[in-house]
Length: 233
Image (cartoon, rainbow, N blue to C red; front, top):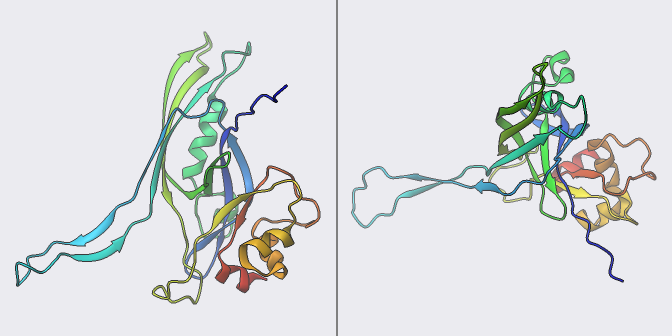
């Protein structure tokens, strides 16, 4: 008898921003917001920059000035009607927290909101910061507590420039996410990502892993770029 398919749930993984000299990098997880219902759709966009100033010669093409980071917009539906005293207030507040500086960054004097990883099963995760969250509350208990809400989350891709890297060098610099599979180890992941298993320490540092031999299957790990991994290891 065939095994019934298990549908993966979408989620937001909030990462502590780690301050650098001129930017921030994603650190260990500080919370997860799991979708109760997977989104029916989400949209992504990517824009390029062009200089359309008048040219001396009509045949001269416009100047390409580069491209912006990708954006992602997704809708989150919340419902707490299945429990007698359920409310979506805490879930809405958790989404709002993604646009506020983390407590640790405030205490360090470098306020910065969490870096958020949007993931959904085997789809390529989206690493970014949340630009805006709006919530429409549509059902309430007699006490006034909201039990149903539709939230819209708008994200901007976040790919910090590694320190000391020439931006025109063309080297890989993006940070991406990896979901731990059965049989994975930090060394095997480092070997697959960088061709060097000794760089496992960089992955451990970025994800605040104290025991490299205890990886939870299904956990989301942030994989630093090769340049960052070499600097951290």
